[in-house]
Image (cartoon, rainbow, N blue to C red; front, side):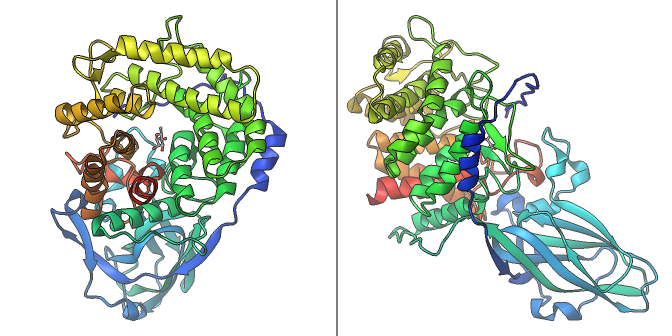
Length: 526
Ligand code: RAM
């Protein structure tokens, strides 16, 4: 894992108030719902489940909750039965002698059971420990209502009694979550699939997407809780295949379009609280994917006016990226504007980046044609040049694979060149068949983001069975390990792997993993 922080505080941004007003006009209504736990749970060891831990129903009966007294070191784990995003409250009283000391409580929210076993003091990862969903509260008087104003992402809530006093115990009642989402399920009809495993994958994908649909398409409701362009692209595709909330996609496009750098570059992510703020992080293809999101939206719901309105911003991304290609059409990577492709930095990304440019340039030319732009020959010529460079210099016909960097052959190069449609359909098929033969089972990839692109490339190359098998082996395995929503990171070869060294900061409901919703609808039902 080697995604690194960027600090670019000297970058100047512009705020286009006209575009940001449109982002505001497309602000979604947040739907709320009251949800109650399904049982009191306890943790048990289970090697078949994530990190070797699962939660099972306790002998304590939830309906009797107000009759139980809780003392020092007791742990009450409430299981809400499914993944929740929302605000938690519970009534607290006491039983026994008068309250001769305060109640001191620790409250933990966990998306998966193993988060409850991890102690925050042991966390030493590179991501902020402030993401750990844990609070400490004192109550000087009871009865009282505990209402936590923060929105949490969880299935389990643990109330650990740090102390009462030997004379009295705490009593809990009415635990409730008010869930929040901007996904409107009322008019959405989920797919019914014959294949049971695919149906489960699809259902969990829908839940993942819905829980990430908030004021913007968040990447993860636990973390980072913001709008990332790379995640948005995939969420929007899954959204058209399900809830079809186009206003939310438009809102996100306007947010990125309304806050570029002075030179016109789009940030990799933006914040919308306490006000609209672009992050000072830039990724080569995340900026370019602004074009892909606009293209995909236009495919799903043609809107020439929107394309015309956002075209200058789209064009700027292409123009800035074209400056990174030499006269032969070769991408010269810039470490200040890195090609992302995947979190791993253990492989060379130059060829994948070259392919991503081709992929987006084609979409850009389509958009330019849509609005009858006069001056697009320049871009057509660039597309020819960059594609020719890929075919003539990066393709090794004797191996039926693309090379990258210093004679390296990796999976990302093949996948992105296939998605970019650089070679003929027959050659694409050969490339993916060679990839399966030489690079499967996949190693060193831990993001559903990269797995998504591998599966889609298999579908595009006509290898439907292989695509379905990979989808089942990857997303299906998360379900086997207990997933209610799909995870930010998962390496099937080492299921316990966390990019941060501890599950407590992993996001177990992460947007870029919801794509089976799109893949199943597009490639298996249409
Ligand atoms: C992480 C998040 C986000 C992703 C970036 C690149 O911070 O998981 O979803 O897009 O990496």
